Length: 523
Image 1 (cartoon, helix red, strand yellow):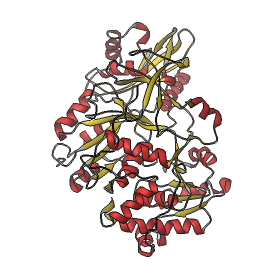
Image 2 (tube, one colour):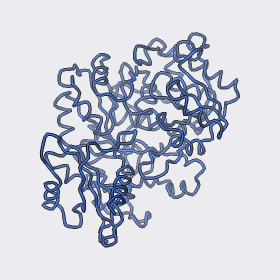
Image 3 (cartoon, one colour):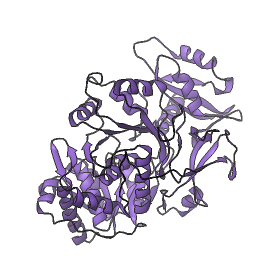
Image 4 (tube, one colour):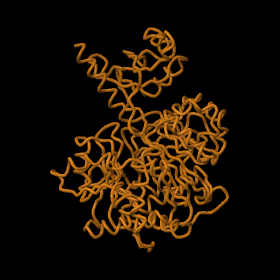
């Protein structure tokens, strides 16, 4: 199925089209110079000042000989991140977006993939960048101090001069989340990123001017980049940047700055906000758009947020390779449990798990394959994996799902997460949803371990309300009453918190590690 709905609309106002992300930024700098671009802590910059800072830093990058090279951004969300990203583009280099909280051992294989000549960082994360210098020989520039604070760069920066950029040039090198294996470097072109921006605006309609955005996802992540870099700049909007996700702080920022567009993300973000001390009393009436995605939303989360704020959480579906893919919003109508319908010019087909070329009929679950103009160019330095993922223009997502008769896509699980018990496929999400129905359950993650008799055995990690007496026996009885025998967990383990990735998704790798370590200790 393919969606052919119009792309550029906004909330009643058309958007200009640009050939590159840099051109969109230049338009904001020259046409909306006095609009406040960035707010972080007690600092702020308008677009004119940000443009001067970007031009000044780009001049340093070029003069140092790093134009046309790969430049790593090892920076937490903040004003420095924005300036660094656009300065790298302005210098004709390729921005490499990495998690600034990774320790050197975790960064090492990513640096090997990216081959950076320069690392832009800040004092808080400079140590990790320097630790890798002996192996990779890159140079490190620390922003946020001395002559390289945003204010100092803006004070001596030149006026903005437009620069032509090929639509097919790299706009970013991003890495897959690594929740199911080794992270891979993804190349996204300017054309693809601009196409993604337009589809975000279609799925989460915002005004062409005057919005105040607040994202909580890290900007090295595709969702964080769209809600924290690409879309706010395309609309010349004001961006309020929180520090690391702290629910009380975020609620305060929404109220204080009259935030209109909130880039929330997975359910864990919204659950955290709803547990904040001032959530029930803060003035959240400015909110107009609240984005969600990355994991299935429990119905009670959607309902409580809507009851308190008056705004629906607009769920979306995507991945680092291509985002957004589908949206479950008012644009097409909503359907509980689904991720919605495809965004404009995106085609979705459901393929047999063992033969991607065989398309499955409506309602039957298989691998979700996607084709759209905003897909990745390639996995850097991985031609075999590129060829395995992109087949005749189709991106094989690794997700399992089905399309119903109304055209709504429902994701049932990850292909790599499917558990094989006695020859039967078991989807972890199905087991998780059943356990989540227990009124005392606050979180659940299901994984498996090899088993000599059944092939694999199901292990459920469960977080229960600490003020109840619910135990393993209660949860096991709950499962046996609702699941066929081979889907009932072999083990249920109670834990205080579920491990999450930096994108606030369930970290199944960490859960499998915990399960394996416990099994080894018990052997």
